[in-house]
Image (cartoon, rainbow, N blue to C red; front, side):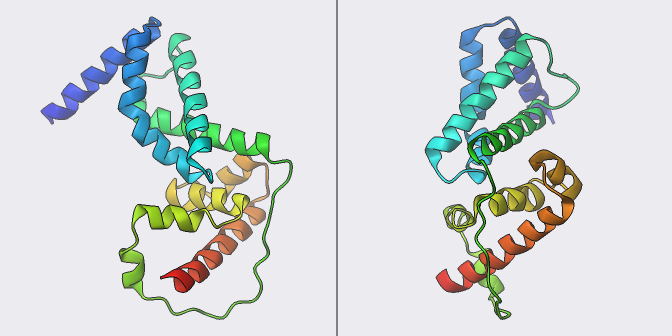
Length: 184
């Protein structure tokens, strides 16, 4: 309990100094949340370079919003940062993708998978599996399964219908099952 209070005060001090435009405190905030934000960015990209680019764009938005006093201090900073990172990743996807690139999945038979395999997957294994999904399927999968958005929210964010969001999620799950069975 005391550690959480100390951490909250630390973040509050960082944010107050960032609001004043203090570059040193901006750097500290960036370094403190770099790994957390990068792990989110990496879920939405195929390369670490693209993830870092999204991360840097996100922090530019964060610092700009803090300086303009647009940060709502009643929301925990980590949650607010997460939302900005996800929205920046989606904006990047929209900007860099003129249309959805899809890979059709033919008829599949029901695969029997060993649940122990899934339990033993490392983070890198999961990222490698996600890297093999078509971009639109990957983004919908991440938003729905990892970030907890519903199909209505996803359809608004990606400018697609709810049914398209459901189809992309279904196809992503089928492709992941095939990949897990094939590779593990």
